[in-house]
Length: 97
Image (cartoon, one colour):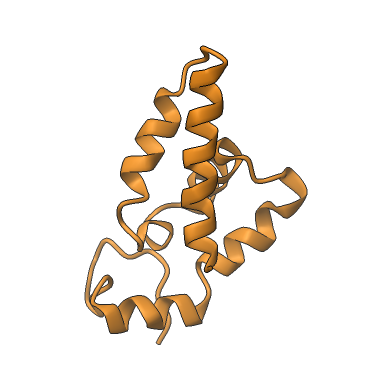
């Protein structure tokens, strides 16, 4: 399972946990919408990405490592091959050549 799928599963679990505790899960529901785009971490600022990772339950000491995995060159190329990222897409902030 790749890092992106793990983040998606973690977010689903967080939504369920928050709902069971009768806590507000609006942010995680919004994150669920963002995660429909597999290239989202290439389109957003690192600070926002880290906030998303915190909200889904990534521990602070693992944020940098998880973030780097999500935006790795291999992931970038895989998304290019799948057509999820276009080479001249202006919405992509992190690009590898």
